[in-house]
Amino acid sequence: MDDAVRYLKPDVVAQLANMELRARLVVEGFLTGLHKSPYHGFSVEFTEHRPYMPGDEIKHIDWKAFAKTDRYYIKQFEEETNLKTYLIVDASGSMGFGSEGRLTKSRYASYVAAALAYLMIQQRDAVGLTIYDETVRVSLWPRATPSYLRSILAELEGLQTGNKTGTAASLNAVAERIKRRGLVVVISDLFDDPEKVMTALKHFRSRGNEVIVMQVLDPLERSFAFEGEAVFRDMETNEELMTQPYHIRKAYQQTMREFLEGYRHKCRDNNIDHVLLDTATPFDKALFEYLKKRRRVL
Image (cartoon, rainbow, N blue to C red):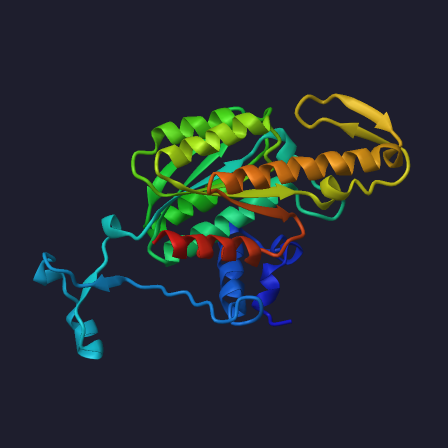
């Protein structure tokens, strides 16, 4: 495996020293792998310029770029960024779950958010970060400067899971505050009332925002492949239940399929992208889905 591409694997990234290094190496690994299947032919352009348009001030023309290309380009400034993206990360108690040998959902979500933020800043896009549990805990509104990226990564580095889930209420609160339309990326297990969550997601859409939902689960939450007698504890209420998993496995799997399919169909019906991830999924899936959406939006 290429040294860069291996940093798309969650277990490898988890061994790195800090969030900035994780984000950088994930993005570098992603860009290295873009020419390989299934991304053949997909390209990413990073630019500090945009074409000159009538009405632009001549003093902002980049004459060095003109000398190389024989075309007029305007230097891009922060307020002229292509896209504003709002990263919204779930830090409620249920996100603290991780089966043996795997990242917790919250750690995985923080790495995805960090890599997305790093990639967005490299593209001169503005990015912000919201972290919530029952209510909004962190709110950094989008900016496009490298120094701001450090603030975002510091919040993600220190992310700790907390209280009960308040996904619907928190998303509605963020939607009310967004004044300039952009791209909203929600990273959550969506363990909340699906009807209320969908109402909140539609709130973003009603205000003109594009939305991607990245639903993060642990592999065992999908398979329920627990062995022997087990005690299950609700990570938000601490209630416990002792059972033989095989007795309820089929019923659980059916309920989980219906839960996931419900979100997938409702998101599709409301022009919301739904991306299902688990904590073993390489990070390139999340980054590629974001880039596909960005290409459609711009």
